[in-house]
Image (cartoon, rainbow, N blue to C red; front, top):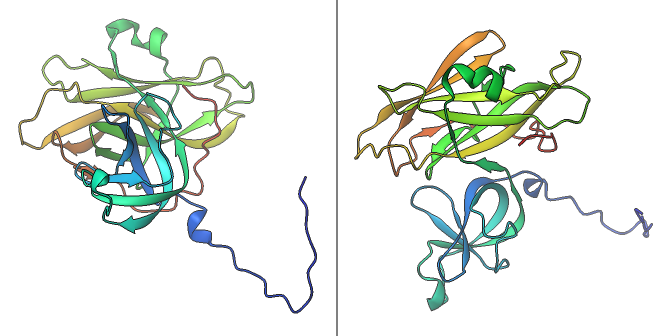
Length: 241
C-alpha cells in the first residue's frame, strides 16, 4: 500500500536523485578464495562494496548492472587489495551463461532459428573474459521462456568465430511485443590471443537474414565497447534463459 502524507504548504519538496534510477556500471560479481565479495569494473579495476559482505547471487560468478557511489581508495588495511571502495545503491544480475559446442547440421533443431538483433550500446562489450550483448527480439504472449545460446566450434579454422542462437520455444508469433534484454557469455576458454588483437566474429540470424558482427578481442583486455546511450528502454523482465 502506498501511503502519502500531506505536509504543510511551507514544507520544501525534495527533488528525487534521478542519477540513482539507472545503472552507472556493468560489472562482474566475484568472490575471493577467502569469501570476500567484490566487483570487477573492467579488466583492471576492482571495487569493494562497503555495504555488501556477501554476493546476493550466491557462489556463482555473474555479470550485473549496478548503481554505486564511489567512496575513494580503501583506507582499511584489509581492503588494500582492491582499487576503490563503493556504496552499492542497487545491483541486479543479468543472465550469465557458458557457451555450448556447435551441433553442426543439428543446430537449427537443437538451438533454434528465431531472429535476433544486437544493439550497439554501452552494455554490448567484450571485457573481463565475457562477451555481454544487448539484444532485440520478438516475444509472444505465451509466457514461455526463450533460450539464448552462444555456439563455439562453428569454424574449425577459426576458434574466434562464434554464433548466437535464439530458440523462441514455440513463442515466435510476430504479433508479440518487441523487447530488448541482456545476456553475457563466459569466453575465457577461447584460446589465449597472447597479446594480439584478433577479430571476434559473432554470427546471428537477424531479421534481415544471416549477419556477422565483428568485435576486436584481446585476452585479458577490454577491447570492444558499445556506444554510450540510454539503458532505460531495456526490458529486464522478459522470460529468457
